[in-house]
Image (cartoon, rainbow, N blue to C red; front, side, top):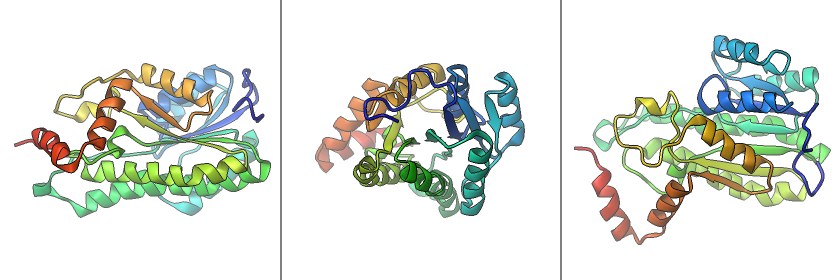
Amino acid sequence: MSDNNPYPKTPAGRVAWVTGAGTGIGRTLARRLAREGWQVAVSARTKEDLDSLAAEVPGQIHAFPLDVTNGEPTRNTVTAIEAKLGPLDLAVLNAGTYRRESATRFDAEAFGVMVDVNIMGSVHSLAAVLPGMIERRSGRIAVVGSVSGYTGLPGAAGYGATKAALIAMCEALHPELQAHNVQLSIINPGFVDTPLTRKNDFPMPFIISMDKAVDHIMNGLKSKRFEIAFPWQMVLATKLLAALPARLRFAVTRRMVRH
């Protein structure tokens, strides 16, 4: 990759890996990349979801079933992808899970699952792709966080904590990776209409479609922006909330508590 372009305008022959690609944003993004000419390796735990996705864009999408919570299989999967398709130019680490909880139903096991998938899934994936990209001095990595990582929100103690960890991790790694000519970004969506959010039974302000979310992601990936955050209304509202003094912030978040 040149210093002026994260990847060529014509990505034919370029290789991307998308985790969490069985459903939702990951699936829609993989389809978009493939239709723009990328060779796309897709990973998720459910093989049937990946096979049906690969059938939508034959010859461009390649299924590599994987549970990213396990380090060794993740490393082996990246090795298999590169053996089949060539070195990775782009990795979008999108695997994640969500469960709403409250103080009265605080579940350590459910919290642990979110840590394993949301944090360690990205950590294992990073550990698998970074050595090759650093050696080649080339590559683009995007980790999917969330605007809920900006500040603590009622109902998202576990989910928000994992996304805050991803934001901090990427902020820490970015300067060093930039010195190796590897571009790292954090993707922070607000509410997106996915199978995961359709389970919510509360208002979701500024919710956008998966296609619109992927528009934002694709535009961000073609830039050198560290943070790819959307929609702007939700980003602004959450960042303003995070910037408030604690007394004022809690006055707002108390109104979000469900009784």
